Structures are given as C-alpha cells and as structure tokens.
Length: 216
Image 1 (tube, rainbow, N blue to C red):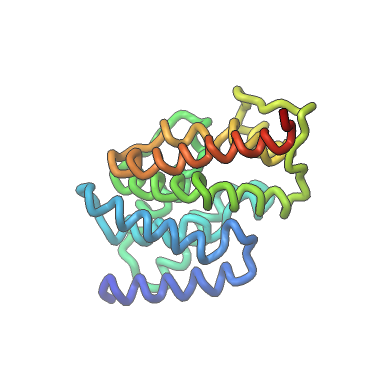
Image 2 (tube, rainbow, N blue to C red):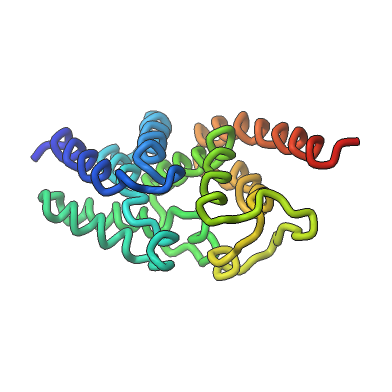
C-alpha cells in the first residue's frame, strides 16, 4: 500500500471515530493540525509520512476523554495502523509522538525526541493558541461545565502533572497555565514564527476581556 492509500484510509478512520467528538477535539481540529504539520514539515528534514500519520492520529483517543488513560491513544493508533499494513518502525514512531507530544507530557522528563515529534507538537500547539485556541478553550470549558472567569480563583503557575490533569479552574486561568506559555515552547523556527502572531492576538484578547469584566 502506498502513502496516499495509507493516508486516505487514516483520514476515513479518524473522521468516523471522531464524528461525535467534543468541538475542540473533532475532525476539524485534526485537519488544522494536519495542515499546520505539513506547512512546518516543508522547512524541516523529516519523514513526511510519519508526520502526517501522527498529526492525523494524535487525538484519536485523547486521555482526557478516556478517564485519564494515556496509553489508549497510542494503542488505538497502533492497532489501526497494524490492520492497514503500515511498517512496524513507522507505527512505533507514530505511537511515540502521540505519547509524548501533549502539554501534560512536558511535566515528565523527556525520554523521546525526534524531528517528526517537534513538527507535530508545534502544529498541535499552534491550534491551541490565537483565535482558534481561544475558541477551543471556551468550548472545552463549557463541555466540562467550568466557569468562564472567577476573580477569586487565581491561576496556578507551578502545577504538578496531576494537578494540571484534574484542574476544574475557570477557563480564563487556562491562558496563564498553558496557552500563554506555548509560544516559548515551540520547537521549530517556522513554529515559533507562526506562534508569535497568535500569541499577540491572545494578549490583545485578554486586555479586552478584562476591560469588560472590570471596566474603569
């Protein structure tokens, strides 16, 4: 099976699996990350098939929707790729990217890195910031029934991994606990360049937000 066939089958699998997914982690999130990854990959020396498969499958079973199980995503991706005959080395690489690319994985000591991980991680982080990142944050906050803002609950800037995974804080806190931190965590020159504009937009959004919740 050639790369085009593999990708076509993967797209169909992801679209079907995520057809009822929460709006911030649905097929269109995947599509944006896939598009971002292909753009970044043009400027990096990397295996494009691995990049595309990891981008397409990175949220196929996100742990936050599966009782915190951080292995269900890599396992689901591996099972599917095995079924369609993808080579074992590609499967293991894709699984490792899925396993280590999330923000919560950054709380642990890094034990895996590759150029392909750097590309896909940047692509995913781009979709977590800027106008789309803001939309996704509030969509997920609504899905979880969280407050938008509570001035009596301050952001926690030094959370442990468990605290981050189990937080119930207002969505606006998430900007300080994750979103505003991502610009400086980008791996590639292209990722850093693309992140800057989105980061600036978030800063402007927050200024407007506070002017409305606490007008002078």
